[in-house]
Length: 624
Image 1 (cartoon, rainbow, N blue to C red):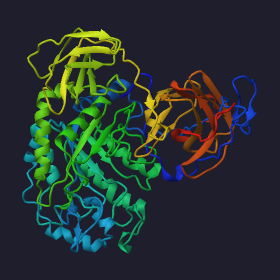
Image 2 (tube, rainbow, N blue to C red):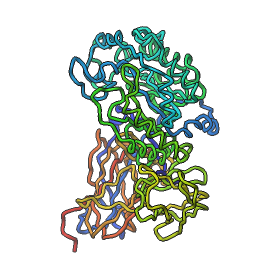
Image 3 (cartoon, rainbow, N blue to C red):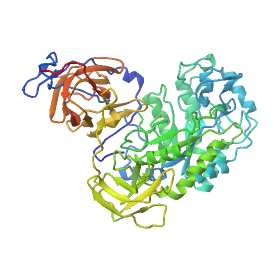
Image 4 (cartoon, helix red, strand yellow):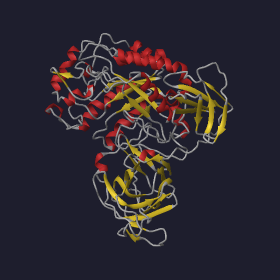
């Protein structure tokens, strides 16, 4: 959930660039009563409340490659409007990998289904031979689209070509496609495009632009090429296969709402720019941040996770219903409908979209386990869709009982844990004009303001076992109360994560995907704050789990813990990985603290990436 003063930004980071970041840290610190900086060699006994410095990083902004350099904010908002209103889409991973379904030569291959060619290191010719037996006669585009619509989804994104290089559409660029190489002889993408048009669903296309394990020159992650047939020039592959196929996709299938790139392995700025120019064929198209070469696209794409605080721009979390994306016959780890519905609510509460995956079988059927879950989601959406579609992020950072979304002057409260005593407490000072159950008879709910916030009188029995929705209508400013402070872990320590901080500043951001870090400390307006509650008087080692950049030299920072101000200066240095570095020590009496980190003097824009600030109890006697 994003507060108005938070600024978060996710980016894909090139590994070669990250390897250049790092710096060993030497601190200069000053006790509160001393007007000058003193080296950290001061003893803890003499200066228990002396200052320490923590500096964090700023990755340079990615070079922007845009579809239309002169696109105004109004034009961009108009282009993104349908997508922002949708909030819920279907991801379809379907390809030749559905035929082996995770089994190769009688053995189950570890990992996700669509990566079987790579994980089993299947030779190109052996994998290509699967096409002669691929005949998905039960594929029905209308049935797929109707299922998505029944689930409450507003768009479908299908894998036109995944990393195995097999095109699920007719292509003149390569005969390794479903029309030319299989007995099916039909173009399922053309049928799906027509079905989407008939049923009012937006069509999106996934295309693996860099990884291609079939065509010579395509890149390959996880160890690189394993078959001499894969060797070749990547630039020639892009010119011969990727460029013409993307042109076909953006020309032959009517309106395309989204182009979903993936795994930009070895994509340079020049390579990305060559493909990006094709987007002009679909002026209203939306793209993600996975093209590579510094191309930011329109959306962030956290995968199989929900970011703690969302992002400041449009974002879409892609999720599976079990563990795999492409069909795998042995994967039965299905998530419950409750889990999926609550994930959709959580994503919407943070201002994002959910792209929920199905992996059809080799015959072209959506697995029954997916069908059951989609229909159960659809029944919930039929009653509660108004609290999802077209909503914006919650004004609350934390709610004990569920999540919230907002639309205009309406605040939707998604209650997962219904109060048994009939009293729902919302941590806010704002007062609505009315309150009622979204799926009810419209009867008003009584409410009052207390020290704990707005208190609603609700029925003792939950209207919905998964997520009941209460509407607060006529809210201009909810005036949320502060989130409760973080408690110490069982060992007495505090781990203050990058994505748990309240942020200020235009560039201060949480970056990364599965591993998150704070970057962007370029002005004095940038600050990160955490709130903690210390249970008893404790000496703490202060430790940064971070990667330090070469340009941190002479950067000055300030860390405030309550009324204690800790200051310092950091020199530059180099390290090639994230690691723990002890920064100093501090004594904190029992109580609640705001831990606030900010830059005070930043001569350069390239510093350090901080993942976690750690306060770890020290085993030393109390100073006398």
